[in-house]
Each structure stands twice: as C-alpha cells, then as structure tokens.
Length: 156
Image (cartoon, rainbow, N blue to C red; front, side, top):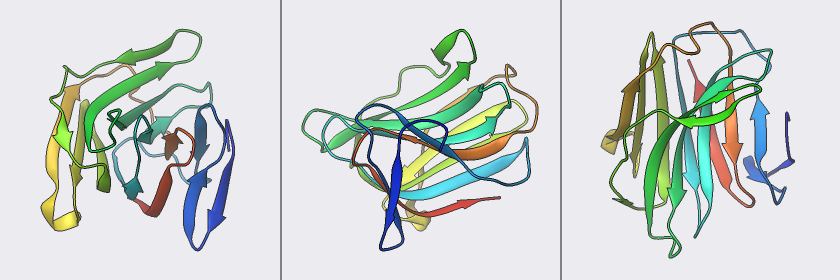
C-alpha cells in the first residue's frame, strides 16, 4: 500500500480508507502492459488501474467514476505527476451504463486505452489518448475510493 488501506476478504480486495487508496504490486517494472480486474463500485465511488508507477510517485491510471445513482459511470485517463498533481489526459467521455464488470487499462508506447464491459468477452473501448509524459517502465496497481471491491487482478 502506498496510500490508504486495503483488506482481503474471500479473495477480493476491498478499499477501507475514507480517502484515496493506492496500492502497487511488487514485481518487475514494465512500460508496455495490460492491467485488468473485475470491479464493483456504487454511487459516487471510483476505481482505477495503475500503470508505469515510478519511484518518484508519478503514474498513469485509467478510471471509472460512478454517478450519484450508482447506475452509470464516466471514464477518465489521468497522469499523476509527482509534485504537480493529477491531469486528465483524455477528452471527456460519455456516460456509460453499468458500474460492475471488467476494467482493462492498456499501455503500449504512447497509446493509453481503457476498456469496460460485463465480462472479458464484451469489453468496449471507453477512453483513449496518446501521451508520452511517463514513458519509463514502472509497476502496476490499483487506485480506489472507499468500499470498492476488486477481484481477479491481472497484469501482463
């Protein structure tokens, strides 16, 4: 855990801190990767998959944020630059139906692509952009708000 607090219950990861919860995996640093997880969010919650997390704390993350009813969400791709803060780097995405399903964040070169769907067979591209701000290899992880549930996390 880099920030906040997580617990594991029944094989799922749950965010516990009222603020931001951020965790990265202990593993090899990679520049080109796909990060994926089953996610479940409720009204006004957010979940993001992290890529290229740097030693200085800079990283990319692709996120979905639920609306105040918890039935729809909006997709975002952010760069967090240590010492400067968060920058939304994708154009505004339309609201999409659903807040439970598979979230996939793909980072290949300057291409950053975020997908969401009911399962891996039904993923839809929901946000994409080109950015070279964080080009170096880094580790992967998750960034969430409180009570978000994450399962079947994979990277590769």
